[in-house]
Image (cartoon, rainbow, N blue to C red; front, side, top):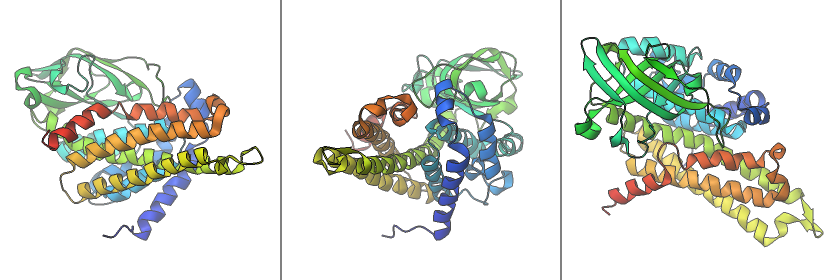
Length: 383
């Protein structure tokens, strides 16, 4: 079994990390405190080529086929270099849950209209699945899409939608036939100025505060048939297809953040003196840091395996669920251990240690809660 990476992949990860640390890191504290969406940095990421990593060459990507392993390493580098976990999360959300479905399932017209514009940073895309009464239970979706002579009429609401207040287009999932459950779910692409479609102001949230979150409302929103992504009833398949890619790369950025977090914690434990020695010499402190290292390395193996399976075209349903469960929970645990090591100063916002805790909590909720991942794995084990 070969665990090595091509030198050019490692070099590219380093270049992304350098770009993130020099261009994206500055102002992270201010963006978090004031919940400011960094539109200028989003554009700089596009100029660097970040958003292009999830699409094919024909629509602005670097290669004829998306190189998931290279992209995954790049997003790891982004998470390491950029302490603004929200910005990394938002970029991943567009790249893997909006761009990938369009690239895979969109019509030629949809691909030409949306992908080059997203890759270049001219427009922002959001992914809309969650509803007030339909989160983990996606089959109870209440946003309806009724076929008529002009296409489809949408009525209902989505909430907790990442990037909603900043987006130009939304990939939204609605039910065309509730009786069919998952086979009645259908995907649509909706431009923000479509009559009957409104977006709320941003909502305050605990972490990843630079990336806005909001609600979408559909009141007799008429869509043309051309807004359909794929075919009627394909929505659930489209959703599952994108989520496995999404988990690889969003979690890659979290892995990079965990690496940065560990290095800073080790440095502090070496330099902080108490009772005549560095605090890292105390076993209770060093043991916590070893646990952080163990979580990081085991999460890395799960991540790389899942990405490899996807690159090879193999099924990774169980692996992606295990990865989502383990890495997101590990980031929370390691963030708390970092706070314990830094002590009282970590509770102060201007030291920024506490921000990782707030950001990490989101990981056990979005893209399928930890409870849901356990259910998926249990079911696949025949339980």
